Length: 179
Image (cartoon, rainbow, N blue to C red; front, top):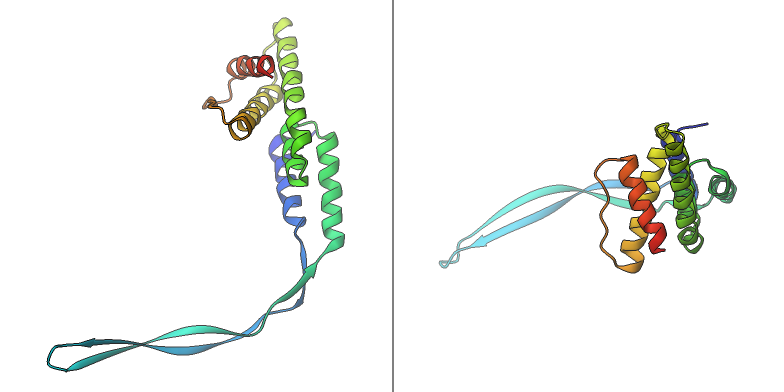
């Protein structure tokens, strides 16, 4: 199993691949010096001119690109795979967001949050401290649910400064009851 950081890095790399392009023609340019005159005058008619030269990049041939459809399609399929089967809900969230599946994500965030609350409660019943994965994931899903509330419902919500399993679980339970 890969860690959360690796999964999110994969999503970021695939996001860039969704807009991959093939360069058909590179840009060609040359530099020309351009004179800028600063003219100051006085009441008696005397003028002083300061000349400053700057380099200006003149484009002779523009860069021409076309979409890299193979790379884009491969990235889309890999993101779809992450969205459907990643062990990290936050990676699923990020992949779904990049795929443009915002409506499905809104529906699934509460399910994911409820599942994490259930996992934390199971660990609590066994008198075993929640695993690091569940703590981290609960915090990330909680933060995402708060984002949905803030952006979509225009409600004010607070996110704890540090991932704390108890705080995240309590807030997650409140969100599940609200939803």
